[in-house]
Image 1 (spheres, rainbow, N blue to C red):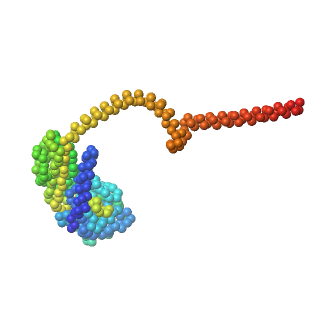
Image 2 (cartoon, rainbow, N blue to C red):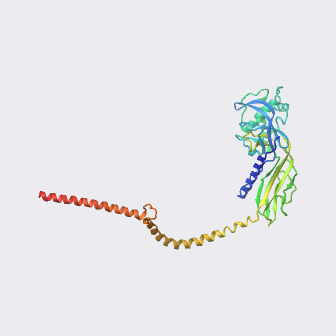
Image 3 (cartoon, rainbow, N blue to C red):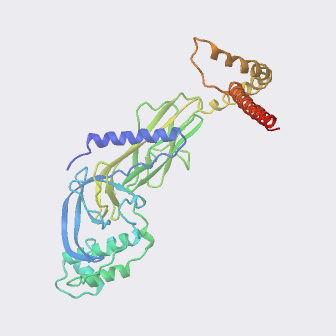
Amino acid sequence: MTKISLTRSAGRAGLAAAAAGLLAFGLAAPAAAEAAHGEYTGNAETGVSVRMNGDTVGTNLFNLELEDGTVLTAYCIDLETGIRSGAGYDESAWENYPGRGDFAEPAKVHWILQNSYPEITADELAAAAGVDNPRFGDAEALGATQAAIWHFSNGAEMTGEGRNGVTEVYEYLIGAAEDLPQTAEPDASLSITPETAEGAPGGVVGEFEIASSASDIPVTLGENVPDGVELVDLETGEPVSAVNDGDTVGFTVPEGTADGSASFSLSTTATVEVGRLFMGDEESSPTQTLITAEGGETEVSASATASWVLGEEPSEEPSEEPSEQPSEEPSEEPSEQPSEQPSEEPSEQPSEPADDNNSPSLPVTGGALAGLVAAGVAALGAGAGAIYLSRRRKAADTSDVEG
């Protein structure tokens, strides 16, 4: 089993830093990642092939080895994506399903996992479905169960005739599946949401929610927690030394406490329950999403940090007074007096340096251009007048000769 690499650890540290940055801008930090991590290490069992949506597809139960060596088995809930050899997986929530297509009806998938193979034996499954076929064994039970899961996870249909009772068991499972009261998503093995929080002294900093399948999880405070700062239950206000699923805690920070931070961590043995989703981690190429078919006990841990800044709230008052004083008084008086005198005198002066031999020539604009146009019109008028007078003289001379 390969432990978490240094690259993955650095990536998670970067995620925590990014979360703190988001909080600094007033945005919500992302939810803490679930605590169980594993790796696909091969197939646990192979079932019969089935035809789904016209295509023949193999069926398998997959081995998912967790960091402490615990091995879980899991089904595929992403019909359109293949599994990658050695892919890393993180435990996650149903709502984070990343596969192609919708995770259509997760509660019914959960019912199938609880009422089908390997949670019950092949013989028990055949009996529940009313199938009396001696050839219906583990491979057939696995194939029928996987086909029924794909029906509800990806909206797929079995289009071929399964042998030895596979079709009959598939039809039984999709017909019997229901949303039982207990089919709400199973608890995470351990998570804290969010991972980071920020605030100011004089109150509670952070609202950390605990989710876990374990109970009475001991709390370990980080080093150098300032005097007077305590981790408390937000409902009772009492200091806590252990937490349970659904608890919400935060740090009380007395007024006047210097800028700082405090953290806490949880570590326990918890159950990764049937129906927990595992998706490929950020280091893996796209790989099919898995859902646990059998639960198992594993060592898990999680942590969270709260930080506070003493001068956070008073920083708003000075920002308003300076913004009004300079913007009103200097903006009106200087705007009237200088606006008239400099606007006329400078407008004529800059046009004079165009005659200076040491100055670069400038484009002809404004009054200079109007003068040139007027001179051109006058010249045209004078020429036309001269031609007219010349023709009049000629006509007069001619009339004298004839007369």
